[in-house]
Image (cartoon, rainbow over all chains, first blue to last red; front, side, top):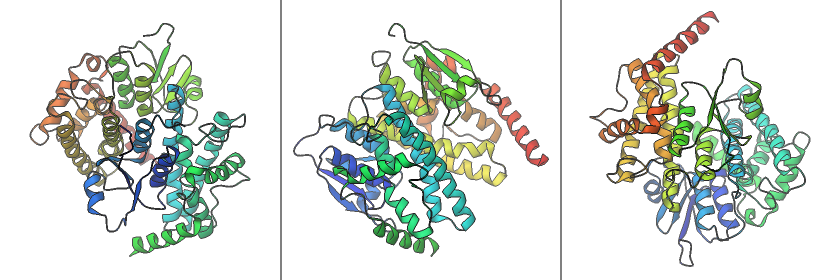
Length: 230
Length: 233
């Protein structure tokens, strides 16, 4: 299993929330890895052979064996490097189920709205997608109050956990979208607990150097829009 | 099962997601109380157990609800480790492969299948069927690679992939009737076709897989209702 001779590679894209969460998970476990930035318009042979089914990033390649799908990868990391504290998923089965529920909620309800703000063809569509994402953020604010109410720093408690990874890996996009379209998905007035949580998340050791800055994200977004429009 | 465990499953017939949970419970040999829900007049119990989505299935274990069928199946596996055969293998990489394919069933197979009978136009239905058949082909390859000649995705015993896909069996057969074409075709995807028959023979499956004729009638009713509502607008 995990050992000194572990060879760990991550195929990703710097701004992808799905790749970012995998990299932060490795950081939480203090696992060194080689990072390979992929060009999604010119996918490498390694990516295509490691993820033949979806041809998507992120892919974790551990001692030559690929693991695909970010939620699967994060759970894999938690299990392989279980000896390295802290754990990413909690120990209690019900708490684990709650964490999986909310992480899925971020991906199924918040992310599509957020991505829709970026890709919207009309201002009407953009507003509709923003409302979707904002509704999800309001729900997540409630969830945070319920699970971390009583003053915990993160959804996971004292350290970044499974839900924190899912939501925190999108933070740079919130700021990028605010700059590009004036859409504020993270608003201290509307979701004060999450606004404070976000500051703690980006300051965490494991997140440093992995979460890109908003400027870089805006540049990437403009390139993506240009290529998609072409 | 440990003494004092109370399991309540909120569901409706013939939801394949409820069937999936019932399969997992049955495979683990767990007793539970099934409380049928009226989705057109949602109960206080359902609304309080799943306030976020207000959907079934919900599994309530000793008063604590778990929502989302794939989350529930993993919960059953983790909360009852001593009961029945394991639904996930021990090795982390094998577990990752199983989770990947269980997610594939939801993200690609189920997503493609929904428009094949709910599609509002013939184009939508045809596109859904095309994507569904592509997913079926991929799953055939997966079964070939993973099972290594053994009967199930989990090898000798059933795993989360078998459960995820197994819960869909009655609906797939019903869709074959409604669409007039084979989805698990013994000629095109022989491994999956054999897997379907084998899975349906399991005791746990025989107990909970909805009767296909019943599902066909249910689907026809729903399609007619949707058409009536659409023309009324």
